[in-house]
Image (cartoon, rainbow, N blue to C red; front, top):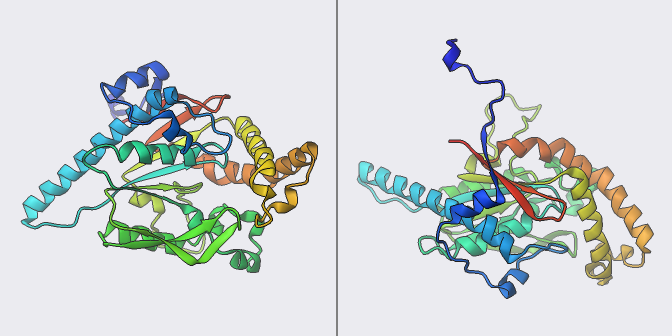
Length: 319
């Protein structure tokens, strides 16, 4: 191989941006969210501010808007070449990251911002929680303590959902998950009607592990993505946020008798902290280490969070 063709030893596939550098890329894009609207988008124990939205999420929405426009232009060019008019395909954005890192808030904020751009007002958000196997199936397979791990999902149904969506089907349906019941709601479905953009948020959406029993080519959820985002932070910080969230849920959602976790409502703060740490080390931290964190470098863009739960930097994959 010629010397000029070799990659340098310090090759980095990402461009790195500080807050000030990334914020400048919003150009003149106005901030369309109010504090009241943002309050409705924040997750439990999330401290997301309008300044953070303005500095990080607004430039990201501008970048995604440019990507969507370019993709739509490519579809029009292809139709012109083929002398046909095909259905507009949804632009799919994947959002991945650990439990408690804030990926759900990221997905909701992006949905709100992207829907305000005039060329793609219909922005749908679907979480992969709905594609978990029902508890009865997980119990039968001995997987209740592996909930959220790759094997706990009905991947076949999720792939069918994505295939139908990307095929231009007018209406696709997703199962509905209840965090209160901690289970799939058997009689409910979420109907998605050919959106301009679909955001798919979940722990393992960037997973690309080969199944040991399959020898031929495999399809992964990420194969359907036009753009992917990974929300990142140091593991010890995510663990801390998880415990904080558990303690807040103990005082709020767990108080409901209908909550699957109602048994934790009367724990003392010390007992609740010890319980949360045990669950983290046995389930969520293990899943992060084994399955989620290894997919980080498959993302097109990485949002790096600091100890205060706020984004501190952005990594954008080079084209």
